[in-house]
Image (cartoon, rainbow, N blue to C red; front, side):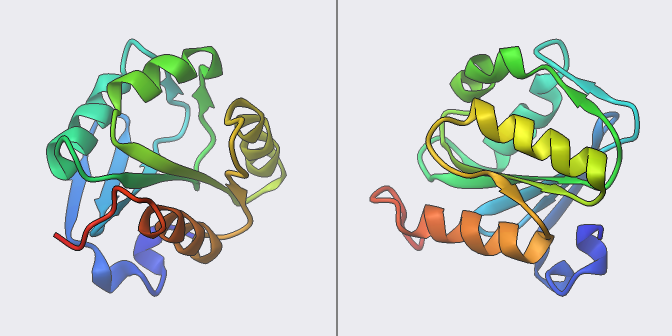
Length: 142
C-alpha cells in the first residue's frame, strides 16, 4: 500500500518527487517510496538525504520508512556512509509488500545491528518508528 492510499495521507505535510522516487514528510517521520528498478547507493543517496536534512534540520531526531511498493536495490555496504550523512536519523523501518520485498527488508534488518527494522505494513512501521523517536532523549515538540 502506498502511503497516499493509507489513513496517514491526510497528515502529509510536504511531498517531494525526485528522479529516485517520492518522499512524504510528516512531523518527525519521512516515508520514502523509491521508483521501480532504482539502485540506491552513495552515488545518488544525496538526492534523498539532502531532502531529509533540509526538512528536518540539524538537531531534531527523525525517522525514515522505506515503503517498498516497488522493486529496487540498495547497496547495503554503504550503510555506514548513509548514517554519516543523515546525522539526525534516529529510527529506520522497511515495509515489504510481497515476498521479495519482505526478504529484502529482512536483509536490511541484518545491517541495522541495534533494532528490528522490517515491518509487515505501513501502519506498524510508522507507529514503531515514531515511538522510537518520541522515546529519544533528543526529542522535543518544537
